[in-house]
Image (cartoon, rainbow, N blue to C red; front, side, top):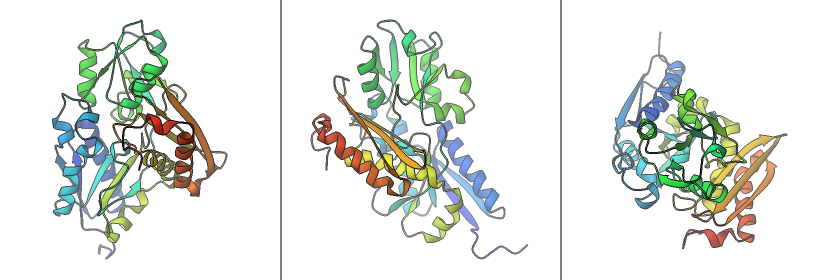
Length: 314
């Protein structure tokens, strides 16, 4: 069989080495191999700064970019062609020279309640210790369940589950998508609805990052792109970006296609949960980023900008 001149001969995927990150990379590898059976689709596993520093909350050590910088360097140096990310871990502003070119179909975007002793948040007694790595989840819990004790929880998914099993926490909150993807659905005691805990922008979706200008690579990965998920995620990320979204800003944003329209819900909160400003915006899916910016403006008009860290809003 003669290889099509438009088909790749070799693609190298850069990824973190955690079990979930490797699942994500293997998933993309499998899909690309199905598209290009003659190509060599390889995986380059790497350890990032975000994986190495586990004794401090992510918001204190530089934010989400710590998980992707080494992968971008590998692309710049020609050791990798693309990187696969959990989209909620991707900074809202992409570094110059890089682009999120494909967004895959979304897994369940919601948060999951995980506990060996309790059936849900409402079952937790006063003083129960809940672990989370997210300011968004922490602010939501403090606002709705002020009687609980919220403690930071770092590490990859397996490490977090181990800490729960060792009794360091009464419950932990994780992204449902990661548990589902690793075949750990049985660990989920309850899936939190968006009304209970509005997800992070991009949660449940995978993003494929490449160097800008790689039109050949963009064309090869185009079949992995899911337009409906992309519309929702672009609205969520535009909302977060307009509010200076980072690990230092407790905010949630979740969009879905409802009755042919894009429906975006979002909130901004004080870190201690003492104040929450929330709202929603709707419009044609093709206006995704404009809808995100519109919702950010609406919340700021109602005082959300006062909840943002100094200089967060651009």
